[in-house]
Length: 465
Ligand code: ARG
Image 1: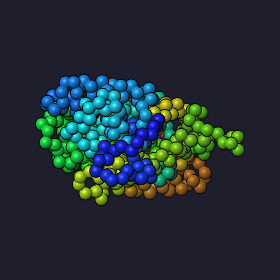
Image 2: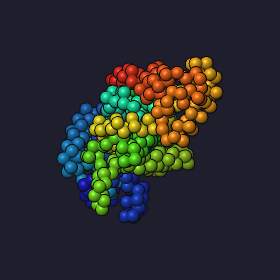
Image 3: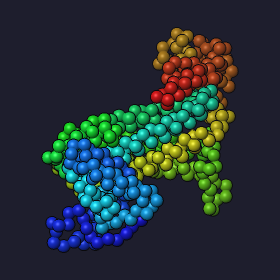
Image 4: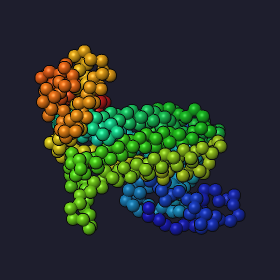
């Protein structure tokens, strides 16, 4: 933020006998971070001014002066020549003062029938609405990378885990699509949150509304809001829409943190399931052999700060009586940082997923250790008439036997398998095979390659919606 220093001149100075101290000025000023709301602040001001003109509070000359001044201010901000001043406290006063310097009295008339309280509530909603649209698009980009990678790996077999122990074989495509589903719910949450973000607070003024003959519906239309807020006290004071957004954001990060944890494990030589492209990894200054999955680790780490922002906003709100309190100024930095973290994380992540190198042989080898098809053998015995509990016990004994020999179930000769149950026949080896196991789970939501391929098609339709 480029700064200038002007004489202390708040929008309220006439009431005071002495200026605020330098320290208090810096303590209470928000321009250091809310300057980034300028574009929304100007949009809100222009909509307000056009409405004031339409209802006869401003003249056509006032309005055209305000429009001209705002154009100039936009250009200054874009060029980086706008002189932001801490003396002017926040984005609202900075812009208003500059407007008045540029166009004179019409600049001073702009603040008729509004307050910084409904102004800031409007600015954040406009900011957040745009941020949600951007984040939804980025989540879809990541979903798309997941769907593409899932399609390529629809038939690649890996061990599925419960309790981090090898449980049953699954396909890698199926595993990746689990994250697609999480992100799809994230998109739903963001879209739902957007409905409540998209209400117009302007008109609430400081807290009680205004005595001017305002046309709130016109301002709402102009700014693309779906509706106007129905209660002025609520409109200026609540930030639940921002809290909701942060909750949705925390869930997105939590989902990515889980995936990061898996990428990190899969990339470790113990697993060796994948390689991440070099551009997402860094080396060690001391250990020349190292290739560290820094991006994944950092996403896992940044999840902590986004979760923290959610708690910060909840805590900020919980003790506030109606209506506006200065506490609310503290909503900006957590909200901005949440948006920035998500935008950067999602952008990098889509690229990282698209660049995964899959070590199918390593995945397959891991799935064939650990008796991953033991359940298939139990199901086989059930189909031959054994009650499931008995079948479970029979297979447990067979596994213990194989473990003692240090081999897989499929490596036991038929006669040896038959010693556990006479129902076992030569067709058992298809059941013990990994491919047979995954192919048999061929229903909606199952891990069979055929299901993965149709799930990818369904996923693409959702991405396009
Ligand atoms: N900077 C303030 C905020 O972020 C703007 C509204 C200030 N209103 C007031 N009456 N002090 O909430």
